[in-house]
Image 1: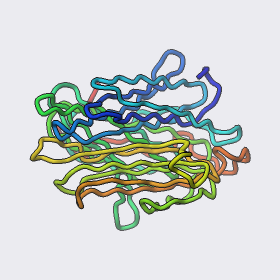
Image 2 (image 1 turned 90 degrees about the vertical axis):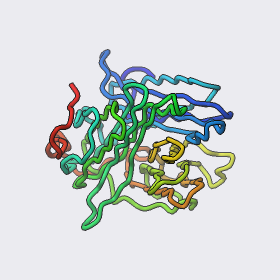
Image 3 (image 1 turned 180 degrees about the horizontal axis):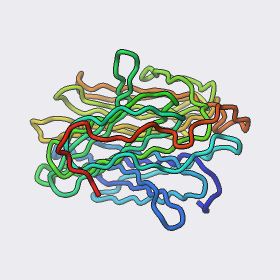
Image 4 (image 1 turned 30 degrees about the vertical axis):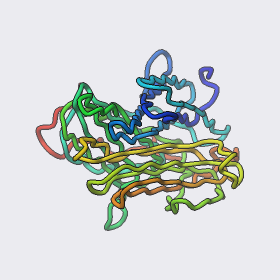
Length: 341
């Protein structure tokens, strides 16, 4: 992609084709020789060691003037990797500058709650720093008296147990006025967590809608389709596919996908509890979430964020937003946490 052609969303997937496949993805968003943010994913499928994490995905906004650079590194077998770029139309809300909000190594706890003063996107990454670390991080949204849990990611790298999930990330759209925080939990030290925010120039996002798993829906407006698969308790493994089609014949006409999978079984020494995906949707396209699981404790949830005038109309009419798009900074609430440089 040439520098500065368009702003938009870059999506890449990696998935197993044969037993034994494993690998990782990295997408650097760069401008002027400087990396602004990095999105990460990894997967591992091998029945010989009971490892069932066959697919993973990255999604990352790319502001005008920046370029996404995808690196795919298979470490066993020949996994399939795919990538797509979804450009915003002229007149769509403009992506601002990336803001680094949170970086910490190890620890466990919640950050303070912040408020989005504009529509925007939250990108959260985590990666292991050696052989043996494991951990997870998730986003919590305040919804009246309850807490919604729309996205999360986890890692576990330990060659002694044939665990090779060394990096992951999630990206979610956030509507102006949303109050949210992050919860992170390092269960074996050596995990680096990062969170970054990119605001939009006007507020076009509408109230998020729950999507019924397995149900097909035609988008009435442009939007963003996202979800997560999570083990609520000690259980097995599950996966989720977010699929987009120009018509309702998904079997042959899938135009894009977001993929996520997880496996959490302490008895088998695998602690990858949650992972997530996000894909853009154009007005008129069909979308659905497909889930597979081998245990009742696996929870899969999917959401659609309506966002008019991003892909199919040039008449942006959203309210102008705050310059920074965020109120306050993310900080750990607990003392004694090790900050990253």
